[in-house]
Length: 95
Image (cartoon, rainbow, N blue to C red; front, side):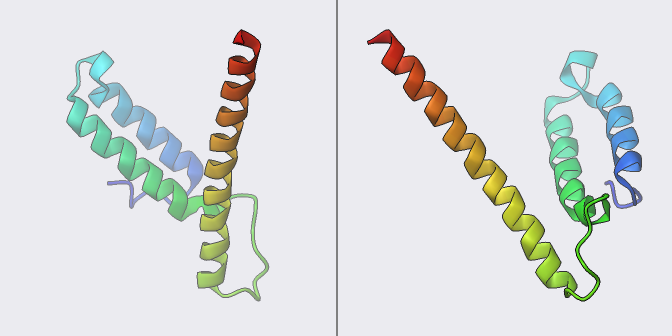
């Protein structure tokens, strides 16, 4: 769906165009919008190596991809940890 997007800016532009057409708040189909959103997230992961952050050329592409994926996993873990800390502090204040 987003295979023709080769830069993050192209992806952003195309996603916005499709969101205006298919978003449920704009009268679009919810299931179709979910498919669009998931396809955009997948393409974003694929393009993340083309952003300003680049790995050295001597690293094999597979290694670079693993490092990027690990970064996404670490970010997800950090978000979960932060949510837990906030919840715990709010719970402690109530008691």
